[in-house]
Structures are given as C-alpha cells and as structure tokens.
Amino acid sequence: MTKSTSVSTNADERSIRRPGFLEIENLVKSYRTADGGEFVVLNGIDLTVSEDEYISVIGHSGCGKSTLLKIVAGLEKPTSGGVWLDGREVRKPGSDRMMVFQHYGLLPWLTVRENIRLAVDEVLEKATRAEKIGIVNEHLAMVNLNAAADKYPDEISGGMKQRVGIARALAIRPKMLLMDEPFGALDALTRGKLQRQVLDIWESHKQAVMMITHDVDEAIYMSDRIVLMTNGPAATIGEILEVPFEHPRDRAAMRNSKEYYDLRNHALNFLDRYFTQDE
Image (tube, rainbow, N blue to C red; front, top):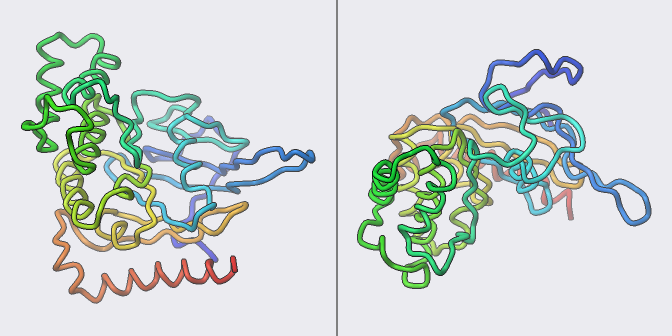
C-alpha cells in the first residue's frame, strides 16, 4: 500500500530541516526480546504536521499508535530516526507538548481549579499570581467548568473530568496537544458533546494536535488529515487521507454529504483489509 502523502527524507542530512512544524523522519522503534532477537513496533514512519493542523492516527490494536504518540511526547525514545518540533529535536518530555489521556490523570485530593493551577504553577513560573489566576479562570470558562471549579474529581462526571484534563493541558500554552483516545472512556452522548467542545476550542485557538483514536467517524469529524496505520509488528503509515470539510464543522451536514461516506468507506475498507490479513 502506498501513502497518499509521502515525505522524502535523508537521515544523514539532519542539519537540513524541512519546512514543517512537527517532523517525524524515518522513525523506527524496536525492543530486544528475551532470546536476543528484535521486535520491531514501528518501521520507517515519515510524517509532517503543520502548526495549526489537527491529525488523527487510526489503526488496529498493536500497530504502535500510542507508542508513536509517546515518542512525540518524549516519553519514549526512537531506536533510529527522529522527531523535531519547531526545529528542535525531541529528546525528552517538555511543556511545549502536553498529553491528554483516556483516563483523565487528575489528582483526586485537588479541586478542578487546583488541578489546572498545579500545571500553571509548574510551567509558568515567571507569571504573577494575578496572571496565573487569570489563566486558570480563562481555561475554566473555555471548557464550561466555572460551576464545577471547586469540586473534587470524584464529584464530577467522566466528561467533566476529561474537560479538566484538556483545560490543564491548554492552560500552559503548549505548542502541540497530544491526545491518546481522549473520548474512549465516555458514553456516546457525552463523547459527541465533548468532541464538539474540543473542536470549538481548537477552532478558536488553533494549534497542532495529534490524536489517537479507533473511531473513524470521530477522526473524520475532527481532523484535517487521517493517518492510517498498517498492522504491527513493524507497522508503518499505509495511507494519509485528506478530510475535505472546512472548519467550523456541522456534523449533520457532513453526514448528509457524499464526500463523507466516500471517505468513511475508504478508511473502513483499509482497516477491514488489514484486519482480514491479520486473521
């Protein structure tokens, strides 16, 4: 399978940066096995993402989606190849990249406000107390959590917890937002509402986003491009699909269009083909 968007790279010319905000070049991730062999998770990933682009990554379980996200986050190191963000090689975690996880990651002994403030205090050290309060209040309002600001995580719903995680990530003004199945633990109604809220935030404060998902409809609704991964081991990018709908998006109007179903069927056929091969 050839990719619909290809990237030409040369690992020996790393001083020459290609135009692009996030640049992933010939990335390989492998692990040593107990018998001295090598297990290759990702094999030759090439991808460029612009500074205001929303990318979704889809593939079957075991294709290395979350591993790729962790490498971009600096939580894991590639075996070879590399990742550059805004011209700098990613070697470790940094406040220029913030993760939103599926299972929230909130501190239960802190209120909603305090969970967000903790991140602000940690990263925006030079901000004054008034500035920090203003940033926290701005992001509470951004995710519609003013009424729940002084509640604890066990006093709010799953959708609200995820909104706290998103507000906490955005409050420190990262260059890139990384989301690992952020809506996967939510019921269908809550998931749809939160997808719309996240899109509203992104459309008014555009930044680079990479989101892992298993949901084709979610990817089409939210993304500018969809990265389809081949099966693992030694997974790579099989195709990159352009999503033809302008922002802001109307979910109902999209679903009544031929382009939506053409794109959806193309993605599902790709995934079905690799699922069949895996069987």
